Image (cartoon, rainbow, N blue to C red; front, side, top):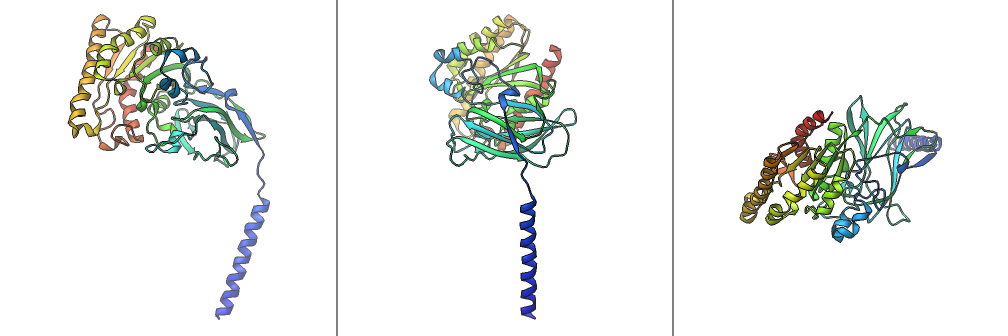
Length: 376
C-alpha cells in the first residue's frame, strides 16, 4: 500500500513538473521598447534651464547658493512622468545620480519610483512601486517591471521620481508594439501650477514611496502641477532662491514652509524680505505661509517646547506686517494638526510618515482649492 502511494505521488509530481516545464516553454516574453522619459511629459518641474533635466533649480544659481543647497536640488523630488499607453506591461529603467541610502527612510521612497493609473476621470490609483535594486553589472542602474497583463486599451499613467536621490536618465519600458504618448494634457492640468518651497519635510522625508510626499498628494487631489522645491536642511529663505521662484511662469500660488530649517532670528529677520521679493515681482500670485510643526517630542523636551513656538511667533509677526501693508493674496496656515492629530505622523519625531504627509496635504488642500478656484 505504501509503495503504491509512493509511486502515485511520484507520478503526480512528474506530471506537475512536466506541466510546469511545458508552461515555461510555451510562455514567450513580449519584446520591449525603451522610451526616453524626456520625450514624454515631465510634470512638476519649475525651471527649463536646470543643469540636468531632472534637477530642480536653474543652472545660473549655482554660484549664488551654498554647496549643500546645490546638492539638495539634484534630487528629483516631486517630479513625475505623464504618459498614456495601450501596453500590457509597463516597466522602468533609470540611472541614479548618487545611489544614496539613509537609515530612517525606505529606499522605495528615497530612490524608488511609483506607478499610478487613472481610473475614471479623476481618481489616481497606485499600481506598484519598484524596489530599487541596482542591476547586476552596473553601479547605479535600476530596472523593474511594475505590472503585466493589463487589459487592452489606452490608459493614462504617471510615474513619480525619487525623493532623495537624482536621476541622470530614465526610460519607460513598454511592449514593442505598444502606442505611447504624452497623455491628455488636461490631466494634471499643465495650466494650473503651485510652487512649494521648504525643507526636508516638504522634500519628502520620510515617505515610504514617492507618490506619498505631500506635494504629490496635493497634485493628484487638485489636478494641477505642484513644483517641489523642498531642500533638506537648506530651506533657509535665501533671497536668490526667492527671485528664482518669482521667475517661474504660470504660477497660481506659492507655498512657503521654511520655518523648520530657520532659527528664531532668521524667522524674524529674513521672512519679510523673502516674501516681499515674491510680492514685488509677482503681486498677482497668492502666497500661503505655513508655520513650522510642533514636533511630538517637543511636549517632553522643554528646550524645543519653548523654542519652536518662538520661531513660529517670529514668522507670524512678519506675516502680520506684510498683511497690514497689503492684505491681498496673503494667507497663513498654523501648525495645529499640521502633521496629524496622532503621534504616528512622524518617523523620528520630526520627519513625516505617509500618514503625516496625508494630514499635511489634507490641511492645505481646502485652502489651495479655494485659491485655484479664484484664479480661474
